Amino acid sequence: MRIVIAGAGSVGRSIARELLSHGHEVKLLDRAADKMQVASVAEADWILADACSLEALQLAEADKCDIMVAATGDDKANLVISLLAKTEFGVPRTVARVSNPKNEWMFDSTWGVDVSVSTPRIMTALVEEAVSVGNLVQLFYFHESATAMYSVTIPPKAKITGIRCGDLQLPMPVVLAAILRDAVPFNPSDDDTIEAGDELLLLFGEQSPQIMAEVSALVREDEDKAK
Image (cartoon, helix red, strand yellow):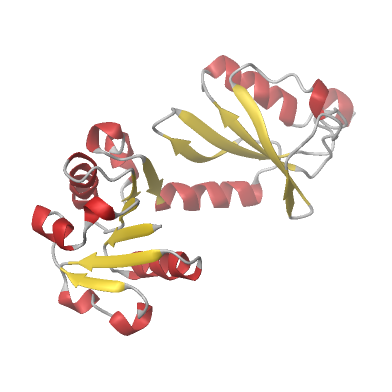
């Protein structure tokens, strides 16, 4: 794929290196000359220009790219870049970095953002995941489909422990997407059984208090079993 990354700071360069290692074609765009550390990602095409301008995106051939990544540390700039990429150049997919969690609500299709990535929220989720057993931890939110991904580690005495996936009665808008067991992810079949210590990845099509309560009751420690 052809990918343009706006923002050549540490985040942008790290993304570029990963994408290049997967065989993608990458262009790095930044307006600051001190960010032009070409030797650090020598395989990428580097462009010194302000990605918030149409001229810069034309120079980067945004109209020919498959994905635009707005990875600057400025939320306003990332919104402008995403909007220009989507409306002026018809980029099929845009990914935008969110630096301030208070601005997350703006990172949606209105501003041309297909996927937003909030570093503070991801870090918070990882911390919660490391210390939480039996509690739902939000990992990601897909704005386009209004779907949230949650993780939960199953405690030994949870109601859900020992139940076949085929018999699992989750509320209608909730789907079990994957199970991580002994650090190995797999797609659960109807005959697989939920075990203590499993980490479940759940997709929520709706996050109403009732649905959250129903799922929480299944995955947390069952007081009756614990006795």
